[in-house]
Length: 197
Image (tube, rainbow, N blue to C red; front, side, top):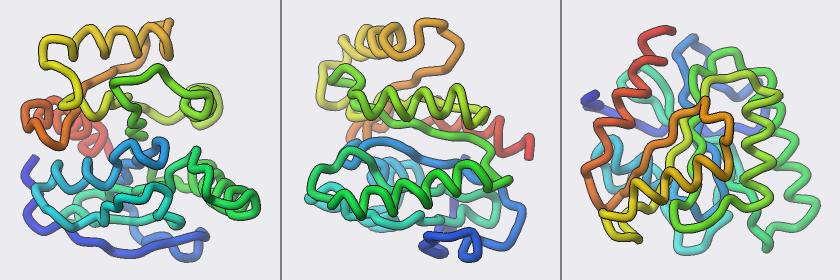
């Protein structure tokens, strides 16, 4: 897919602030430092569309990025960042759950995990939520594939899949914002869910 004019549209913390249209939404979830902003930027070939930060946990709202009035990338606040106060964690958790539970335009959840590490407890909680509660199609993206040798990527993805998804009923794909060799597979997967909406 070629996105010609991606743009940031709005940050939201409640349903009244969500975009008022029926465009499908591709939702990005993952821990705070997993690289969701870099994923958005490289997928649409922009350097600064989504703000990246050297300090994880900066995103405290739901950010909607309009892709040529075709669909949205929706960046949810990352989880597992210890410097966020308990009160803030509860507040952010509530509006994330409200969005995932009540937004009817969600076409696909893209769940980013770090290809280098075993899934964390928070990763497993998010996985269980997606699979058992949300009933929404999901793609697991094994991100930061540039941090390991190309020859080890396939095995690392298989290991994550066997650890997180022993039923083998979800798609896992590698990705790297540095290596541009994985993008077409991701776009091909996303396209199927955009076209169906």
